[in-house]
Image (tube, rainbow, N blue to C red):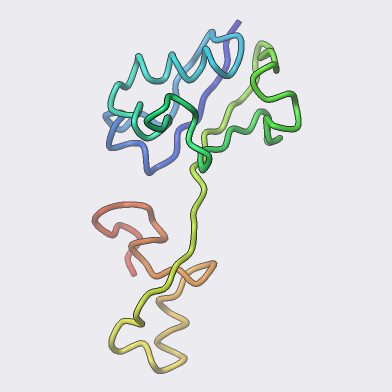
Length: 129
């Protein structure tokens, strides 16, 4: 059995640039353990201090939230595609200088009101904004 696991951009600095892995895990707990074994630096990003999966990490199987499929009880099927998606929370930020003009703001503001570096998920902006 093979499951395709897609990892988010935010994790790639901990995966040596790997965007996906193939897994033979039978369920979510086994998959998380496999990811942590393959990429030990991700452990603190996936689990909290008590060993529980962080509440802002979401897993989707074939584009459906695993919580609606039975969560940890769901048995992966051959060919499933699993997306690991960290939630993105908003916050308050000061408007960068020079963006007070609406036309300039429209060029720089990305979906959900995030400014460039927050949007592309990289420490150094790569989206050209």
